[in-house]
Image 1 (cartoon, rainbow, N blue to C red):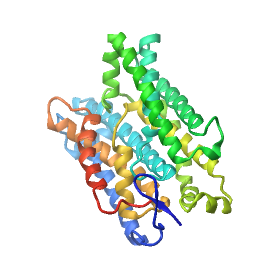
Image 2: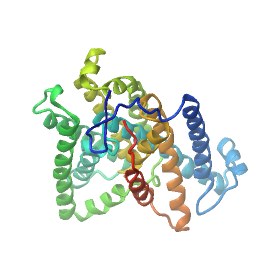
Image 3: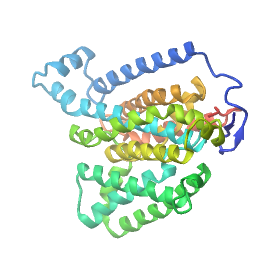
Image 4: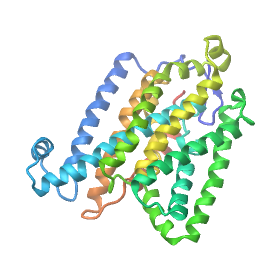
Length: 353
């Protein structure tokens, strides 16, 4: 039985020191659910204009046409639902990415998802004149998918699944992401309007999106989440080594391909809806793994629950820190995530996968 360090190399067996009993893991699950409920309540009630929770509840079910009801129904409720959906997708895709690459500090952007989405969005703005958030959804999904396929082809030396090792995928993703982002900056340098629109999308924000945007990405998120959670057992088996996985009836190349596809769908849909958000899919699964241990049967669902908590609380913080103006959630997650990640990476023992 083997695990890996943050750099992807082998370390001691993952079962040598259990991170916690089932009771502890269940307690963490309950705490995550409670925190999610609290984060949802704060997201709807708190802002430049505070609304009492009792009024929030009343306006959710019986809007009276008042300005407070309009704020709850038309602004904060869509924003909160989008935060839940995007956060869950980023948390799960980050956990899957870390398990697939056997690197606890990996994140979905390594597969070129963010870069592919960015170049497609900028291309649509600059070349096709598409400027609506609904257009961004489909452009970003298409770009994320194409970029991930390209990374997988390059990482597998022309398409042989067995050779698509975690290291090759990581290196291919970094190289292709750099090329794609160079294309993004070239297009925005030549087109000022594209630059202005891209800057708003690229900062990452839950504001300015309606439920129509969520409706476009929701089918991808539901299917991706369902398939992603089912990958827990195969990824646990893969962590024992590819030879052991094959002995258990798994095909490592197929498992990696399916995992990569799910990561692309989840992260691509979330990025399409709210823009690229850093650290959410990286720090949350790593922190969860430190609390529950490396068992993906717990890591995957807990990351799915915990990431929306971080995203919603970061969004609330951005509303109140600079009130009546707002700091976009992508900026807040960067400020919050960087020191957390540094602290986690500086621990003597990085949580094993």
